[in-house]
Length: 475
Ligand SMILES: [Zn+2]
Ligand SMILES: [Zn+2]
Image (tube, rainbow, N blue to C red; front, top):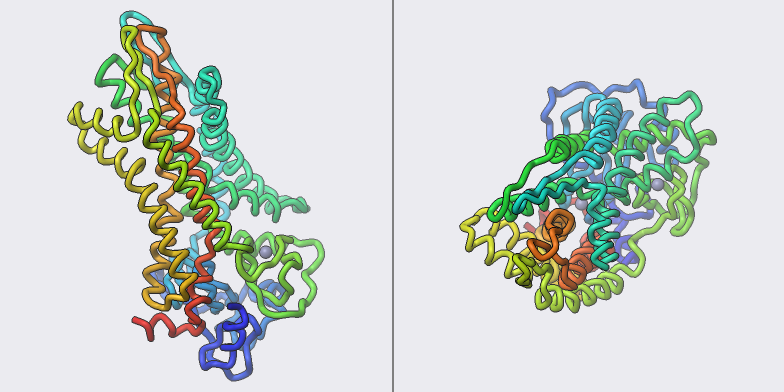
C-alpha cells in the first residue's frame, strides 16, 4: 500500500512520502478565516526554518508555514502561518489539523493549574449524601474505588481509580508540567516524553463522563430516598468546564514547536523518505523505526498491524458484549429482598419512573453506542480490506465519531460506582455490583482500544487515493 502512494508521487498533486519533486503542485490545508486577514508574521520564521530544514522550503507558502501529514487520511500538506482564531483543516478529508489560539500556551497553563486545585477539592470533598430511615451515608470521589474493592470487584475498582482519579490528575499535572517546563531557563529534557504521555492519557481521563454518571445515580436515588448534593459535585462541574477549556485552548502544534525550539542539540538533517511523526506531527526525512528528531518517538508510516489488532480487539469486545447484557450489572437490596437489574433493566426502570430524557441518555450510552461502535468498526475494517474506494470522506468522518463517542459508554459503570459507595445500609438498602458490569466495562475499553488501533489512513491507501483533489474528484 505504501508503494502505491510512493508510486503516485509524480502526479500533478504532490502528496507522497518521497518528497516534493521540483515543479510539482503542493497541497495546502484549508484555512477557515475567523480572524481578520493579516500578513504572515515573519518574526519566528528562523526557528521554523531550522525545524523544517530537511524539507523543500521553497515549496512552502510563506515563512512560517509548516508541513503536516493528515492523521486521518495521510495527505501531506502545507499549513501556512495562521492568525489566532483560525482553523486549518485537511484539504482532502476535513480533519482538524490545527486550531490557533491567542496566547494558547499561557491560557492553557492557567486552566490546567486551576484544574489541579479544583481536582484536589473535588476528589476529597463530600460528593453525595443519602438518608434512608434515619441512617446517613456520604461518599467522596476518592472513596469510590474502595467501595468496589470491598464487594470483591477489584476490576471495577481499577477502572474507576484509573479513569476518574489517576488519568485526569496525571493529564492535568503533565499539561501544567510541560508548560511550566517551557518557561524555565533550562528546560528539562523530559518535556517531549511528558507531552507524549499527556496525549496518550487524554481519552482515558473521564471527568465529564463521570459527572454524567453521578447525575444519573443522583436521579435514580432521589426517586426512592432523600439525597443531598455535596459541594464536591459542584466543584466537579467546574473542574469539567476547566478540563474542556484546557483541551480546547491547547494548540498542540504551537506546543511542539516550543518544545522543538528548547532542544539542547539541534536536530540534524535526516535522510530517507518524508515521514510524519504520529506523536508530535513533525514531518521530516527519516526511516521507519528511527526516533523522531523532535520528540524521540519511533517513526512509523502507519500504525503497526493495525487491521489485525483492531479485528482481535473488536472480536473480544463482541464476545463480551453478550454476558454484559445477559448478567445483572447490579442487585438492589431493599428491606431484605434483592432485585437484580441488567443494563436494559436499568433503562426500563428509568422509564417506569417517567424519567424519559435520562432513560434515553442511558439507552444511548449503554446500548446504542457500543452496538453502533462494534458495527461501524467492522464496516471500516471490511471496507479497507476490500479496497473500497467509495465514500472515503464519509468513512473517515464515521471513524472520527466512533473515536470520540466511545468513552461516553462508561456512564453506567460510573453510575454504579456512586450507587455502590452510597447505598450500603445492609438489608435496609444496598447495591451489590454484578459481573455484567465488569463485562460491560471490558467491552467499552476493548472497543476504545480497537478504535485507537485502527489507522484511518489505511482506508485512503487501500483505495489508492493520494492527491489533494482526490476527494473533490470523488464527490
Ligand atoms: Zn485528511
Ligand atoms: Zn515526533
